[in-house]
Amino acid sequence: MTETVTIRLGKSAKAGLQALADADHRKLASYLTLVLERHLANKQAAKPKKGGK
Image (cartoon, rainbow, N blue to C red; front, top):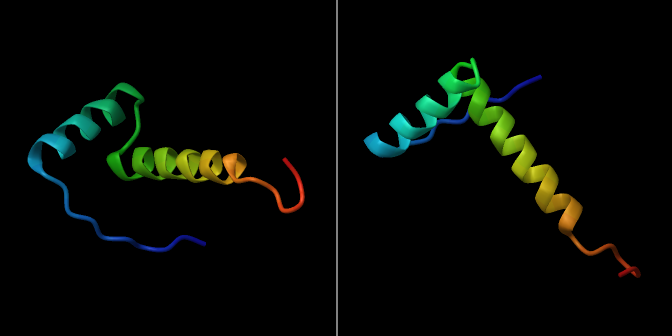
């Protein structure tokens, strides 16, 4: 299941992200989902574990 999120971007940010999405042969929404999910996974992986190092 997916959820809808609405964001506002400046023209240059949207254009840059659209160019990256196009280069990856994805729609902008799909590209943003991929990038945000990877970012979240990286942040979660970098979190220190309780009781560990």
